[in-house]
Each structure stands twice: as structure tokens, then as C-alpha cells.
Amino acid sequence: MTSQLRDFLEIPYDQLEEMNLELKSQRLARTPLDQLQEDRMRYLSDEKRIKAVTVCFTDLEGRLHMLDYDKKFLLKSADNLTFDGSSIRGFSQQAESDLRLGIDWSAFYWLPSDIFGPGKVLVFGDVLERDGSPYAGDLRARLKAFTTQLYKQDGIVCNAANEIEGFLFKGLRAEQRFRETGEFEFISTGGYYHSLPGDPLRSFIDAAAEAQRAMGFANEKDHPEVAPSQFEMNYSYTEATVAADQVLLYKLICRQLAHQHEMTASFLPKPVTGVNGSGMHTNISISRGDTNLFYDANGEEGLSDFGWNFVERTLTSGLDICLVLNSSVNAYRRLDPHYEAPNQLKVSSIDRGSMVRIPLGNARSARIEVRSIAPDANPYLAIYTILRTGLEGPHSSSIRSQHRVLPDNIYDAIHAFQESSFVAELLGEGVQQKYADLKLASADRCPRRLGSLIKRSEVQFHHEVTNQYLWSKF
Image: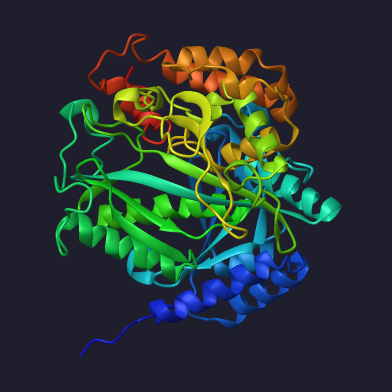
């Protein structure tokens, strides 16, 4: 007779959802961080069935990095966590490699044990300099600081909701293996509304959406998308930093679930020639108390002057920030007008080829939808850029009458980004140059003229796909 050697924490999904939603409500209510830290550390100390705490952070390009800390070690050393920043693309140089990691105890999640394993919880971290000051390349901390400042100064809350599309392909590590195979194989060809219950794509969507609900996403709907093997799961809007965290968790859940079933969840913007690409339409609204500052029942399209000002500032700097929203060589394949691509620098309530759309809304739901954004964008950098551009960027009153389009290649986008004095002000010249250098390094490993077929290099050297081994295969 055998017995279990260790009783690790496994929480039923309905209880998980209650626990994660409760902590999310505390976060949205801006419960003091020292109180949350005390509560979470007491919980970790008392809960004997937890073995490790996964601490997450992102690099400048938006890749998720995860470190598992033994629970007992973390409780003793939470104020003195370090890691090698020189091993992270776009972070510190080898001569100044050590960086610190601070725990954001407000961004704490209980995990579905059938997906992530029993006995683990997850928390996001802030990247810090050696002296404990914020690290300039950590856009999560910068987004959080900016939105916190707006709230403290004027009671303003920035809200976001991301509509993240992706593809499900047959086989493990299909993106990394694309260098050898040269193709992706669909798991389903059912398409929009035509994937039957129980087929592999529908089963995957059901499981991923259930995991998202358990982690407090407040899901609304999910469905296969237009292209074969394409999916999308939608959830409610929330405060901007929480929304950006959920983008990374959404992709992590999808990748982990797909891997368990020997498939690959891909968030390449345009992985397959001849079918629609994937986007990450980002809905933005700004409120003060119970008032949606974007809404005006008598305004054009139900949008207030404040909202229209936000739209016009976004369009004015559309070329400058295009690289932030479309951050890979492959992303510029998606900006193809033949596939409902939002490549036009204009605003519309109905034309889905516009960079910005004004969805039908009311006093609660009025918002703007930024459509020219790919699912491989760094969500913190993208949302921070959209917010600061819409609130503070240069403004042209004639921008809505102009007819301009976004670049069809990453080199033009890099040039506009590097030459922009607004981007320099937005990010700082150091981060502006470092980000441009990262994008150029990947672009230079790909053909300048991509043609119509997906090339191996644009997948192999994509920032969400490549690793040290693949990067050396040039």
C-alpha cells in the first residue's frame, strides 16, 4: 500500500475564482501594499501545503520570465531578491549585471493545480536597480507609477480590456521547430462559429476560459475566430496594470494548456500565409469615480470632447508609436488591407480598417478601441504608451481629415520611432534607443523584402519564440 508523501495545495476551481476575485477587488480598491504584504506573508507562513512561489517579471520586449522561490526562502528574503540582468535581452550589461526584484503583493494569484502543478502560487515582481530604485526598462513599474500618480492627483482611473487572438497548432514547440518544418499544421479548420463542441480547438478554448475564470478574469465570451485554428477569449475591463498582467497570464495559460496536450498556442501576428492574422484590440476608457470621462450622450458617436481629444492625440502620434504596438517583423504582415487589417491612421465607428474604432457604448461602456496592435506587443509598454499619448501627446486638429497609413515593414516603423522627440520624452532616450536596437537586431536577421510567404527567420528570431540556442543559429 502506498501513501502520498506530501500534501500539496490543490484548490477547486469555484473556490479559486472566489479567492482570486477577492484579492482583485482589494487591489482595485487600492488596499495599502504593506497591509497586503502582511496578509499574504502570513498566509504563506500558515499554509503548509505550498512549496514554491513563482515570481514573474517582463523584459523590455514583453517576454514573461518566471523564477520559482522556495516558500521558506522567500519569506526570509523577500526584501533582498536578486537576479542576473545581463541574461535578459535588453536589460543590464554584463559589467553591471545584478538587479533586484521587488514583490508586488497586490498582484498575487492562486493557480489551477491541474495546469501549473499543485503547491504553487504566483506573484508579479518589480525590477529594481542595485540601490532599490525603479529600473528604467521595467515598463510594468512605469505603467503602475503613471496610473497611480493620475489617481492620487485627480482621482482618475485608467481602464483597459484586451481582445487577444491566437492560433492553436499541432505538435509541441511548433514555433521553435518551424526552422526545420517550414510550416504550421492547423488543429481545426472549422473557422468562425463552426467548431463543434468537443473538437480539439473547442475543448482547448473551454479549458483555457475556465482557467481564466478561476484566476479572476471575469470572462464574458469565447469562440473560434475567422481563421482556421484561431481562437479568442474575452473578459471584462479592469484597471490598466491589472489588465496588462492578465494579458501575460492569458498567454501563459494558453501555452501551458496547449503544451499539456502536445499542441502549441501561438501569438505570432501572422503565422500562416493566406488567412487572417491575430490582433490584440485594446479598449481604453478613463473614469473619475462613477463618471466615464469618455462618454457624452450628445457628443459625436457618444464620445465626449475629452474622448475625442484622446483619439486625435493617438492618431497624431500613430506613426511614432507604431513600433510599440507592432513590435516584430511578422506584425507588419498583419497590416495587410486584404485581411481586415487596421492599417489606416483614422478613426471610425464602423470601418475596421481604422487604427481607432469607436464602439457603440453607453455611460458605463463608452470607450475607444485601438485596433492596430498585435498580440506579441509588450502589454505594459503598449498600454502605457497609449495612455500617455492620448492624454499628453501632441495634438493636431486636422488629423482626422488626413489620409495616412501605417508602415508595411518594421524598418520604417523603427525609423519613425527613433526620430520621434515625443517617444524620447515618453520613454527616455536610453530606453528608446535600447528598444530600437533590439528590434533592429531581429529585423536584420530577416529578409528586408518579405514577399508573400512566411519566412523561417521571422519566426525563429521572433522575440517570443527565439532563445539563446536559436539566436546562435544565424
